[in-house]
Length: 411
Ligand SMILES: [Zn+2]
Image (cartoon, rainbow, N blue to C red):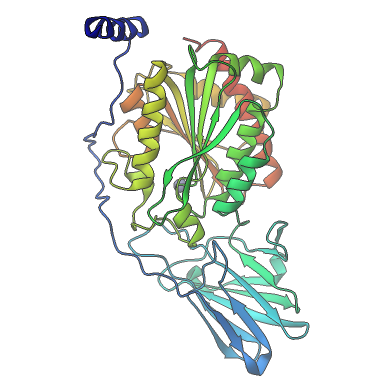
C-alpha cells in the first residue's frame, strides 16, 4: 500500500512535470531590512473649537489627522505625520469636519518634514467624491504646507487625499460581484487581526489551468491602482466570449487588500510592523506577505500547474508599467512589452511609461519570476489620472492580457 502511494505520488509529479514549489528566500543584490520598525500610533479623537462652533475628527477607518488646532478665527492647522520614518513621500490625509452653522473656514495642512502631494477630495457620504475646485486651495512654499478654503455645514464633510476605499469597502466590493466562478475567502489575518481577503476565480475544474495572480493595496494611499485592479477583475468576470475562453484555460487568484491595517490606520506607506510590504518578497518577515505567498504556493502545488503572470497594482505620480528587462528569461518572455504596446494601440490617451528592470530587489514583481519563472508587472496608475481613463485602462488591459495569454503566449 505504501509503495503504491509513493508510486502514485511519483507518477503525479512526473506527469505534471514539475516539482512542488516551496517558499524560498532570495538573495537579491538590492537588500532591504524588513524586520519590524516601531510606528507612532495616531490618537483618535474629536477636536472641538468652541469659540468658532467647529469640530473635526479622525474617528473613522483610513483617517489620518495627528493634531488639529486653531491658529486664527476660522483658520485651523492640521498636522499630518507619517507612521514612522524614513518613509516614501505619500502624505495621506483624511479627516471629517462640521460646524454649528454654515460657514467658510481655512484649513492648513502641515506635513512636518513631508511635502504636499494629493489633490483633495470631498464627500458627505464617504462614497461619492468630488475633486476640490482648484480656486479653493493654495500650495505653500516648497510644498511644505497646503491651505484649503472649506465650506462647512452641520453635515459632516470628509476631506481626503484620495477617495476612501478601506478594508470593509474592499470586502463589500468582493461580495458585490455576481459570478458563479468567484469564491471569496479569508486566507489569514493581518498583524492586528484584520482579514486578508482572497478571491479565487475558477471556472469548472481546477485541473489543467495555469494561474494569473493579482495583488493590490500593499501601499495604503494607492487608491488609483486599486480602482484599476477592480476594473480589471470586473472585465475578467464580465461573461464576454473572451473572458469565458480565458477562464476555460486560466485560474485567477486575487489578493485585493494586502495591507488592511495600514489602509484602515491611514498610513502613508507601511503596515503595522512599520515596514514597506513591497520590500519583503524575499524574506517574508511580515505576516501579510508570508501568508499570501504561502497561499499562492499551496494552491499552485495542489494542481501542479504554473503561475504564468503576476500583476501588482500601485499608484505613483504618473502612469508607469514596471516590467522585466531583456536579461530576465521568464516562461512567457516578451509578453509584457507586447501587452503594453497592444494597450497603447487601442488607447493613445494612456501615457504610461515603460520602465524595465532586472530582477534584483525584493518586490512582488520579482517574486513571480524567482519563485515561478513567471512574468511580473507592477502596474502603476498616476495619483491624478482621470478616473474614467483608469476604468478604461483596467478594462482594455484585461482584454489585451486575455488575448495574449490565449494566443501567442499560451503554453
Ligand atoms: Zn506602491
